[in-house]
Amino acid sequence: MEEPSATTTLTLIDLHPISPNLFTKLKEKFKSPPLVEFSQNFRRIDAISNGSFNMAICREFNYLVTGSHDSLEIYDLITHQPVQESIHFGEGVYGIDFERENSGQLNLILSTRRNHVVKYDFKRILREKSFGEPIFQVPIRFDHV
Image 1: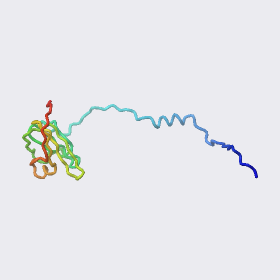
Image 2 (image 1 turned 135 degrees about the horizontal axis):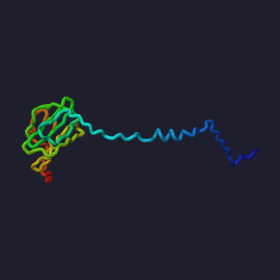
Image 3 (image 1 turned 60 degrees about the horizontal axis):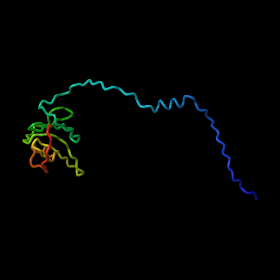
Image 4 (image 1 turned 90 degrees about the vertical axis):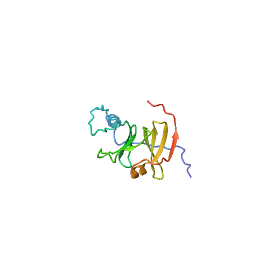
């Protein structure tokens, strides 16, 4: 019986010669797309005339929610028209945000000009067309600009 050999020979044969342009083509393919400067050509669609500069987008309803000194206004993002009459808010709106809970509840968070953070049920605001009682209210000191 012959003893097996301790060495193995492996021969690699490349049947396709490498094109000299292959590496160049690969580099071109993975190169990032050219940067295009932003044109800064804005087209005015509609204007909001209530003097609001506090706003948030509610994607669930396609609404733009804006707040001003004493009111909250809700606009449809498609038609650019108010969804309803402005809702009076005596404390003044300083900032607007939304909280989306896992339960599906959509809350409107407002920071007020009277140094409070207030949380409301947004669907209830839409339904009743008023704020009603907040879910909670916390006094916080802001440095108003």
